[in-house]
Image (cartoon, rainbow, N blue to C red; front, top):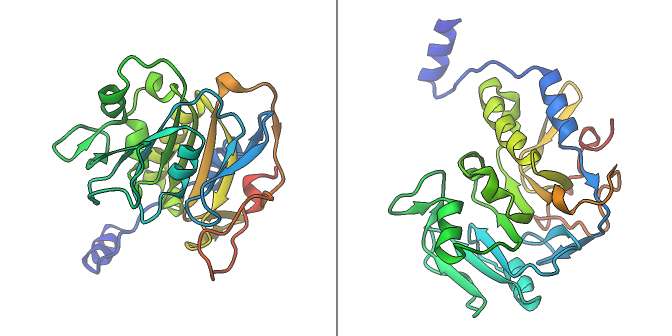
Length: 261
């Protein structure tokens, strides 16, 4: 087997062991979206950049939004709701629009501080060192979300009432080694949060194996357990407010294995 692996590696391919189906099914079951007693609202644009959040933004004053793209519909919508946003991305020099409610830093968000990056904890401490109110997080950082979550202390994560995170490369859940890292990331979030919405990106497709279908890129909405009044499973997918991320591409519904037992 080692000769086969070496030959594949020489050709630019890496052979790995597959994750057990039972392990993937268990994780997917624990990520099943819940109705936590709040209606969902859409914040942001009608396509990519718009997200579904629990209708519980009252008293939230600040959003941390790492990853700056060509649009800022989400942050602009929040600004209209009197919520200020901190934005960070080393790959750009400024947000696509300038608003007095935006504070931008040319930094990546990562697991460690460096000349070009800092952690969520360092970022928060720079601007809100003693702030005790609830915060909002919207994170789209092209695959670095796993290291960021694993590198963020639980008490810092718990300061967020709502987190919207785009998880990339989810097809790698089928890779046994990567699965362990991904599961650790989700386990950490689930200590303090419930999943309240999932939305697959229709521009990236999905992979299937033995009845398990995993979208390659999916938007997760997490709601802090401190705010939850009731719990029941959701099965209204796609949600009436869901919109395709990629115009002109075939729609991708949330696979049934993510919301039906």
